[in-house]
Length: 351
Image (cartoon, one colour):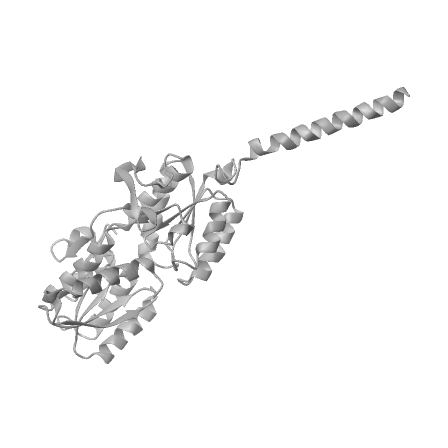
């Protein structure tokens, strides 16, 4: 009898221990719906996913992200697909979810195609922000916008009009047809062209080089062949404008076909100095990456939620405020900067 009672007591004691352990487990592991990634090394991992490998602009942006996150004590993961496709980014994001990163910053290759996998990441407690090229508001907590989209679009039409004395055919050499930032800038270019003062300027085509050097070269050559009276090309992509600059240089079209858009000073210096591109614009991609890093950290730490009016400090980038962005929210940086023959020498060794 005593032996039987002893066995019963042992079973009861074991059951109590098991119940206690099962009830206590969530508090030590963290909750995917509340606190982000699990505690430990995984909770300190910040990932940046750019459009594709081999893109100097993207590399500079990732450098900025890395410096900010490491300054804040985080671990950085930098990833990009070989080609600028949504499918390549989706595969990378799935891997990052498995790694239980704390945050994912992404320059999206497609506004909507990334939604399912990014929502999956957010459901796992991962903070998601887009940067440079936005994903839709359902796919992120916030967007980091490199400059005012309206000003980017309008200022390029103002520039090209001055270059061709307000008359002639122009073309646009964009990145991919799904790139949200490019498409938004082009929309503003078209709206600017509706003004009476541009009535003698004809936009003949929007071509897409997919942010690939060889394809951008081919598209530029095709534009020149199809439109022999072309007066100017606007390339709001660092890969595209550099490719167009090379084609115009190789064909001896300096001064005959003007070139402007968004380019890296280091890549465009020779074309600006030669007059192939009288001037062009950009912001500092390193600074954009830094702000993305500080934004990701603020989301993970809970100091902001991505709501309008949220503010946080972004190191040497100063105080940042969350503002509206259509259906979502964003951090809005400043106007694009003009690079010309007077200042390109001091910038070409910077980035």
